[in-house]
Image (cartoon, rainbow, N blue to C red; front, side):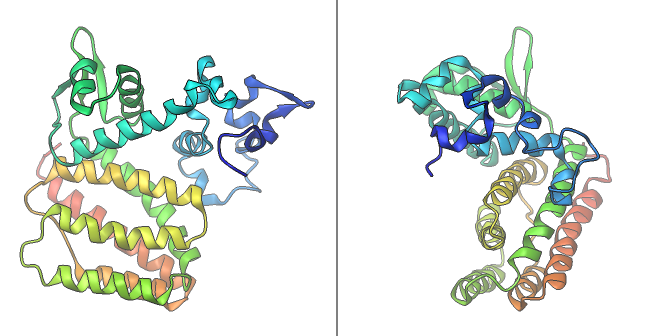
Length: 293
């Protein structure tokens, strides 16, 4: 079944007819429970950040852009079918600009100039900025437009808390499921990075993403993997804001995590991931305790 077809949304029909009201409300679809206490069909890890999960789940199903009536053209093969892809591409480009430090806290983003810079129309720029605003990475100011948000310690720690829940579950599910050749490739990349006396943020992130990406993919849950990647991108943005010159990398800690997941012991894998992200969180809190907010 291909994404973007009516069959994808069979659960959202009412009495055999298309029901646009239901598709706008995740709780009306059965993805999330109607009552807060009805959690029997949902892993506990997803309930820890339900508001965030609902948005990402909605987008993962290809439905975020369908909230606007004109995007119904996507089902009919019209021009609207291309907008979600364009918006996603622009969003990724803006994230890269944030990670690279080319957009810094306090910088003002105008749709026209950014459209020229990214060679895109203003509509996907506006929609991508709206997504960044919903994630707290930018905010709107009267008469000034969209501004890159200041660094927030609380937001950073919140992201790490949700990551800890999701990635610990991913590590548990991935235990023993990463192919040996991929384990060897990640190990080689970690050891090579450990030999670099002055790794850059990009060097560290590339290898870190390789490790965490393998674990997320091996968990066998595409929605969980998408959530993890989204949160890790935001972690990268905050890391770039926080300390762009002195990156943190612990080869032993990362190798322990890899070994735990490769061992096939689910409890060991989960505990190793919890310890790994908790160490990152504690290091960040320690560095910021001097008042950098």
